[in-house]
Length: 332
Image (tube, rainbow, N blue to C red; front, side, top):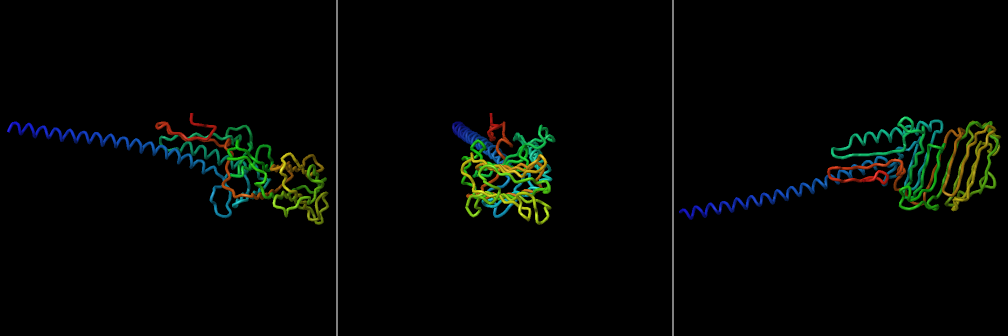
C-alpha cells in the first residue's frame, strides 16, 4: 500500500508539473501575441493618424466624381473637374481669403497636436503664419501643387493675383513638370479706372495686342481684359467698343520665350501679365477687380495638395519607437 501511495503521489506531481509547464508556455505565447498585437496596433494607429492629417490638407482628393470645390485655397471659388481647375477671385477681398486660409491651417495644427490619441505625439510645422499667428508677413506666399502634373498655383506674398508655373521633384512630385501637360489656359480679368487707360503694351512673342494666337489649336493661352463701366462705344486705347481686349497665343515649349503684357495707365500703376513657357504670372497693382482662370490639362488630376515645405508633420509613438513623418521633420 505504501508503494501504491508513493506511485499515486508521483503521478500527481507529474500531472501538476505538466499543467504548470503548459500554463507557462500558454502564458508566454499569450504575452508574445499581446506584444505583437500591441506593436501592430501602435503601428496602425501611427499610420492612421498620419494618413488622416495628410487627407485634411489635400485640397482635392482623388476619385471625386464630376465637379467639386477645392478646400483650403484662398480664392472666392475653386472648381475642379477630372482634368481641369477653375479659379475665381474677388480681388477687392483677396486679403480676407488669404487670412481665412492661414487661420484654417493654423487652427488645424493646434487641434491635431492637442487632440492626439494617448501614446501618440503629433508635431506640425507650417510656414503659413501671418502676423496674427506669429509670422513676420501679413500675407505669406502659399503654394499648391496639381498632381501628377506637378503644376504649381501660387498666391500671397509678392503674387498679387496668382502665379502658375511648373514644379520639380524637389516640390514632392514623382517627376518634373512637362510643358505638354497643359492643354489650354483661359483667363478673364476685369479692370477699373477705364478713363485713365493709356495703352495695352506687348513685348516679346506678341507683335501686337490682338488675336495673334489660334485658340482652335490644342495648346493655347487666351486672356480677356474687360474694362468695367466703360461706356459703349468704349474708346479706351487698345480695347474694342465693348471695352474688351483679347490676347491669345499658342503655348510655348520654350520657357525662355517670355512675353510681357501691360495695361498702362496715366498713373504710375499698371496691370502686368508675364508669360514664359509654363509660367503665367498676373500682378494686380490695384487695377483689377475680378479674376477668373481655367486651366485644362492633357491628363486627369489625381489631387491638389499644399506644397510639402509649407506644412510638415510627424506622428510618433515613443513607447514602441514607431514614427512616420514628412522629410523636414523626420524621425530622428
